[in-house]
Length: 123
Image (cartoon, rainbow, N blue to C red; front, side, top):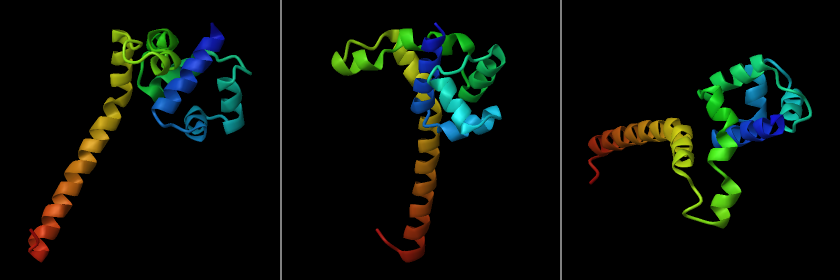
């Protein structure tokens, strides 16, 4: 089971676009140590799992069960029915922060565009 947790952590980290360096920094360990942890080369303490859950903004149960709720290989091989309802909820949860960021960037871009249009009298 611990190997599955390591794989789940890696998958979630990649979905969130977090680097190993970022995770290592947040956990107070070296990048090599974090990499070893992801590769199942070292056992993850419960305390580290709790810290990872905080970084991911997910509860521990969701991290532990992540691989069973969303199987990316299956989803790629058998679209669109391979995603379960809980898998879709996991994907939504992971991308919610990215959607908010993109909406903010779009709003900033729209305001800047309006400013330039007003300033230079463009269409």
